[in-house]
Image 1 (cartoon, rainbow, N blue to C red):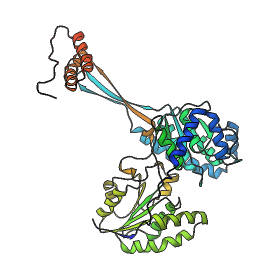
Image 2 (cartoon, rainbow, N blue to C red; image 1 turned 30 degrees about the vertical axis):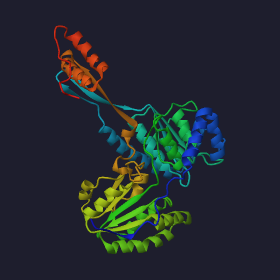
Image 3 (cartoon, rainbow, N blue to C red; image 1 turned 180 degrees about the horizontal axis):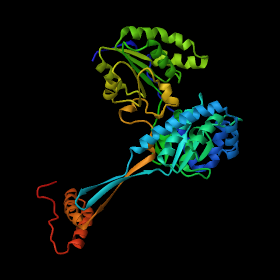
Image 4 (cartoon, rainbow, N blue to C red; image 1 turned 120 degrees about the horizontal axis):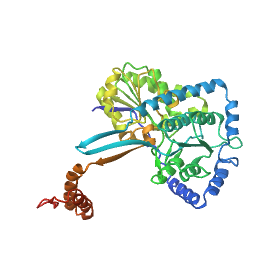
Length: 438
């Protein structure tokens, strides 16, 4: 596989600060010991918020009333698309049963978790779409209790648009909390709310570390790192669109890499020349973020074939993978490692981030090799059951007793022995393992 770099990252993606784990661990320990009082103290110190933690209905209604109808319609449009896609996913998750052998029936049930906690970031940008992605998906999965939280702004609280989105999507309670204290409050069931069975949603390194530490006590969607994007483009691609797509994702920040993989040198060189000018067209804060990501982390790779480009993509396992190349059906069949796939120039990652339907909470840092993004599946448990007749118990009991003794597990063997003795008192069974085994 021939791959050459026309631009290579000048530094590795920055790891979390070494003291993050210690800081987060200490905060969680204090919250565990002092409960809601510690959460309120951290809210005052870190969020600069001394108002209601559980957002009252009147405050939600007031926020809804302040929002322009055009914005409401846009958010309703996004909600409808995301709900429709989640409903299609839910329809694929079914109960089933099968007669494994005569008299033995086994099956599975799909049961939603009882309570979910949805974290909606609110730091550098107001992630309104994250509220829709997480809460809507939990609702469609059938979760009975959904708690949502987002960092309040000093003196103002949660931004109106986020409150509207949370309410629109069906949050049963909304917490004006951010950071570690928000994650801990949902995990522990503070403020009179159910303890979350699963925590979902993106967040900064402190939120991600809190979820990592709490995993086991609660379920989590994933431990997400900085966002990333790979664009695959051939000679048919429009370099202007490719350049803008790379810059659009780079504006997330200086720890968010973007990669271009192409089989066309002219396209690569055009993009390399165009990106700095495009960055200069952005507002200063966005340009600063995008420029740092592009200068330090971006890579442009030249490959000699479509298969070589696909292998690079599978190796990187990007969070977002955008193909702007001929024969899109081939790429859909071939590519195997990504969070979400965007096919053709008519779509873009921003569509998926905001409103097109598939979820934008996705695996980062190469985790697309082994997991997918947030979906109704994350909020559901596939549990199994079985039932047997006495005749089926006869053959099962004989095999179980022998296998158990072969493993040295006599107690297990005798749970089979006693059933054989009860159900078939007139029969004699050979329940010893085969000679020479083990």
